[in-house]
Image 1 (cartoon, helix red, strand yellow):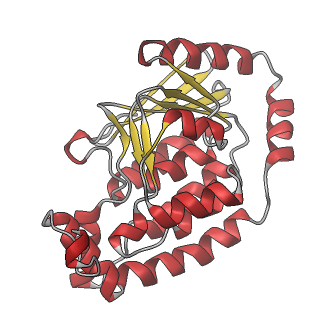
Image 2 (cartoon, one colour):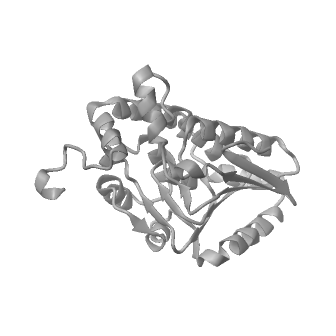
Length: 258
């Protein structure tokens, strides 16, 4: 399966789902979320697939929500991309097959949500991360559900509230990623993890993964999708997205701080 937004390759027990939307830095548009959901479901249904890898093209793993599409949804009162994202994250979290994330570049906001659903995350030492939502007038509601199950409450408070960029070493320190390696070594380390995972019996892998899952995640994601929709449609959310697109500070930043 290949679409305009996602490449899927399968072989030797591994299905690799590659985010391939370079025009918007692999931002989570409705089209990409739909393609990723379809590709993931196909990988889960294929008995030959034992491990699922989330990867990406280009220098950015995922830039977060597609803000252009989000702004357009305001005008027509349409569905925001964050709503189907909640369903995708629930499906990834509940996967009966292990997921490995290959992070060779920057991840922001919703992109970190994808990473948090993976069992093993291999990250390039040049990658950076940020929960940038509050700087856009919204909150990391949906992605907080898997993320808070990976990182400490103190780290979540610092990073959710400041929106500051943090590096790969910090991501490993707080438990967001598993391994930080040189950019040239990411694929090799991902392959090694896949080789190890394939040695596990399929049903046992699914059972072991179930031991690590919180069964309340899907319900919590549904509630957080409603909360996220509210903040995106708020006056602050609209202003934050507009300011981002116009490359200017939002109005809530004091003039002396701009």
